Image (cartoon, rainbow, N blue to C red; front, side, top):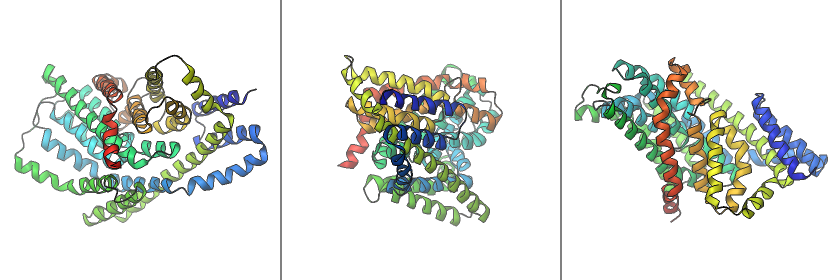
Length: 433
C-alpha cells in the first residue's frame, strides 16, 4: 500500500468516525497516531504525541481561543443580544420590512462579540421572533431573516472559524479578522436589500412597525455603546498594530467583565456560569486541535497533501476552475457538518492545493468561512435552521422556505468576493502598510 493511499484511508476513517458521532478529538488523535506509527515507526509515534500536544497547547496564538470565548460568554450571559436587537428595531422598525432588517443588523452587532453563528441565531432569535410575529410579519420572512442573519457570526470578527483556520495554516489571525470585516458588512447589506425587495413586491410580508423620533433613536444607543466601543477597541487595536490578536482577546475579555460589572449585569452566578462555559468550550477546542495537529503530522508523513498539490498543478485546467470545485464541495459539506469539524477535516487537505495554485491564504480563509456559513442554512441538514427551530418552535421546512432568497444573496456575495479579491484583502493590505 502506498503512503498516499494510507493517508486517504485516514481521511475516510475520520469521516466515518464523524458520521458515527465519535468524539472528534479522540478520532483525530487515534487515527493520526496509528497512521504515523505505520509509516514512521511506533517509537516515533509515541514520542510525537506528547511533543505535539505540548507544542500545540503552548503556542502563543492558541491562547487567543479562551480569551475570545470568555468575552463572548460574558456578553451573551448578560442579555446584550436583546439590547442590540431593540436598538436596531428603534432605528429600522418604522419602515416596511424594517423589523426584519433590524434583526439582520442585530445579528451583525451580536456577531462582533459572539463569534458563533449558532449562538447568534439562538440569542437574536429568542429576542426577535416574537416581535416580528407581533407586528404581523410573515413567518417565513421572520424565521428566514434570523437564520440567515445568524450566519454573520462566523464572518465578522472575532470568528472562531478564522482563529482555527489561522492556527491550522499558520496564517495571521489578525489579518484574517481584518479580511472578514468587509465581506461581513457586505453580507448585512445584501440581506437588508433582499428584505427590502421582498417587502416591496409583497408588502403584506413585512408591514411597518411603530414610528420613532430621532430622540428615541439616540436614546436607544445608551445600551449598546459600550459593546460597540469594546469591538472598536479590540479590532481597532489589531488594525493599528497596537496589540496582537492574543493581547486583543485578553483586552476584550477583561473589557467585557469590567463593562458588565459597572452596568450591574454581571452577577456572581452569571460570572461563574460564563467562566464554566468558557473553560468547557476551550478545553473541547484545544483537545480537538491537539488531535488535528497529530493527524496533520500523519498526513504530512504520508505525502498526501503534497501529492494532491503536485497532481492538481499538472492538470491542464484553469486554477479558478479547481477553486470552483472546492467551493461547490464546501457548499455541500457545510450542509452536513458543523463548521469547526469541517474546517478541521478539510483545511489540511485543501490548503496545500490552494497554495500550489497561487491563491492568497487570507482570501481562501474568507471563502472557506463564507461557504460554511451558507452550508449552515442549506437543506437538508443546515445546522442553524435546526437550532433556530428548537429555540422558536418554528417548523424546519418553514425556515428552509424562508431562507431561499437569502441563499441567492449569499451566492451573489461569493461571486463578488471571488471576482474581486480586494473585498477581503483591502483591509489586511492597509494594515500591513
